[in-house]
View 1 (spheres, one colour):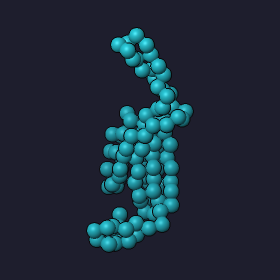
View 2 (cartoon, helix red, strand yellow; view 1 turned 180 degrees about the vertical axis):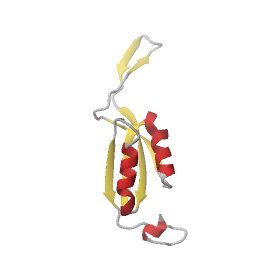
View 3 (cartoon, rainbow, N blue to C red; view 1 turned 90 degrees about the horizontal axis):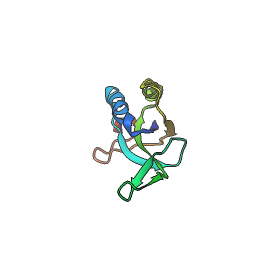
Length: 109
């Protein structure tokens, strides 16, 4: 099994979630901030009399765990969304345990 983490701009969240939903996958998403290559923007303060550049860029991270056989399908589907900034990370998952049913492995997904 693999954990796929996708970090993209918040504006592309609904597109990515629709892709994962169409594949029948469950996922989690949360807001992330970091200093990467993505551009930041100016923020006004003090009633518009001053501006500062935002220090961190705000993105969204989407995480899902899939069977090994689904990894390429999921990645290709996300890449087919279009040209958006972001990264896709793939991690090895040793085991998954469903706490309610006590099932292990892919059957717990």
